[in-house]
Length: 378
Ligand SMILES: [Zn+2]
Ligand SMILES: [Zn+2]
Image (cartoon, rainbow, N blue to C red):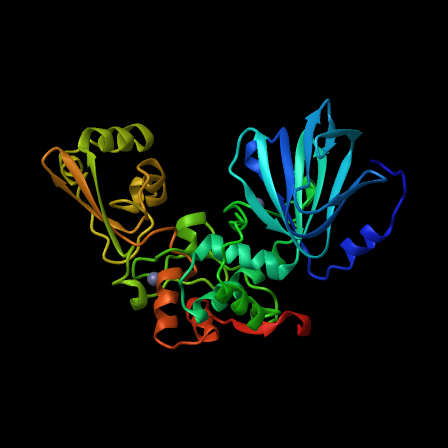
């Protein structure tokens, strides 16, 4: 049943949601047909200027991209084609989304949705409160069963990132994406009450520099015992992110790794990509021998121009922090850490939390010249 009534309250509702995040979801899947069904709370569905109906228990809508428009079915009954569909919660609510084409596992998201067509593709945007967004991000990044102070430091990092990058995808019609390009946000609504408590107890807390500007926050799973200089990863150095020895992560789960690669495969890559001088007998002998006591940016010697980050990508290594030696017809890489190693080291931070450091002390340990402040008082 469609009633052509222009209503303003939904727009007012959207705009009154302070610090609301606008997250592009299911971006990588070129979704053509998707259902939105009720999970929690009460919802209203609007299509262009028409009220379609409520979305309560057992109810659902299906949206299909047809000829650049959104064909809408409300509980299996066709409603017509539209440019924009909104699903607005009254109070706390959650929606289950299931893509039918392509088929993607169901996900649940809190708060509101806007569906439109951008550049010929269906655009699904989750309009979500900062608190609910951060709970989803921390669940995606850190998992369950962590220490409260760890969740708090992760909440400060992720809130700072979200505020600093809130317009990163503006041209695509939303603020942040749901992938690691921005911050992983694959909401399953499984997060523990401890995550929500940590987000609430750090409400409004952000990481700032001495000029009270938001800091660019980076984190990775395990730095391998030495936080990496950002210039090794991205060619540019990043303020407040410096290389230093981190003893908090060296006996943890992802502290070390080993990878064996056939020498022919390794050699071919170095010769083809970088013209490794195999004609020089000394250099040929050294090809599989490399010591990395402290973090370096290049394999063997900088003058060869072989960035370790390239080797990491080519051979899918856990980190760039490895040494190498030949063994039979293989080269054995013995590495430390997992991830790019820049900024906050998550396993180190978890260990600090267990050892009674506060979230402020942990944040200030991994970033230099920063402090935790209330965003609304900057
Ligand atoms: Zn992004
Ligand atoms: Zn570390």
